[in-house]
Length: 76
Image 1 (tube, rainbow, N blue to C red):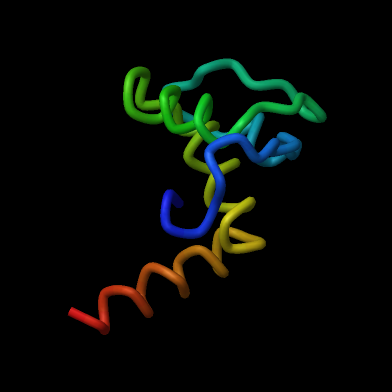
Image 2 (image 1 turned 90 degrees about the vertical axis):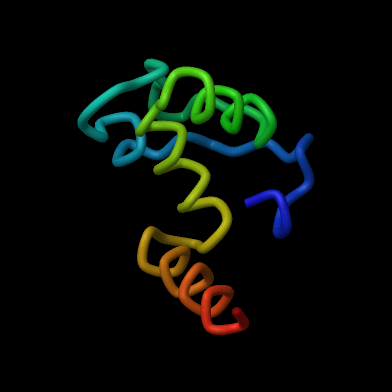
């Protein structure tokens, strides 16, 4: 995420991200949060909703983010 985004970029939270199961930072659909705030929510609260929103924002979708991660892994 850090390699592909500016920390000050705003991310609009999707319904899917807000409804993700597991631990949460209680994001709401349509809410706008910076990449930096989402990263803190992911690291400090293990927020699955924050992880989902970051993946969608960075990769365009969960699948797109997985593709980016797999591409990065192939380099190593």
